[in-house]
Image (tube, rainbow, N blue to C red):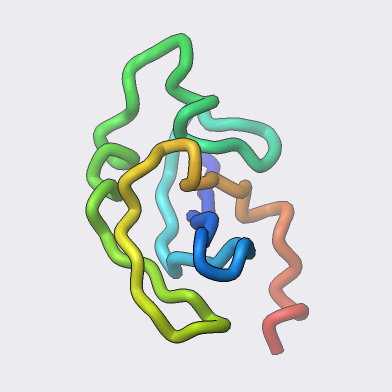
Amino acid sequence: MPAYEIFAHCHDCGGEHPILMRIHLDDGPDAKQSIAELSRDRAVPPQLAAVRGHKALCLKTGKHFKLENDADVFLVPSSSLRRDSFI
């Protein structure tokens, strides 16, 4: 089952920040996609619905913000992230 990292768009700095959460979906996207795009033609999977209301941290301002808008929350296939870039 493919794994996806979750990122959120930050309205304070305009960047995207990792939420440090991973979910597994059988029929998730092949490339980066927002929850809103993914759920356009179908119901939001329960794993993704549970993300709403979680808080994210802006790495530039240090402020927390809630994940409320599905268009601002992105799934990124774990296989597309280079692990050695985090060292």
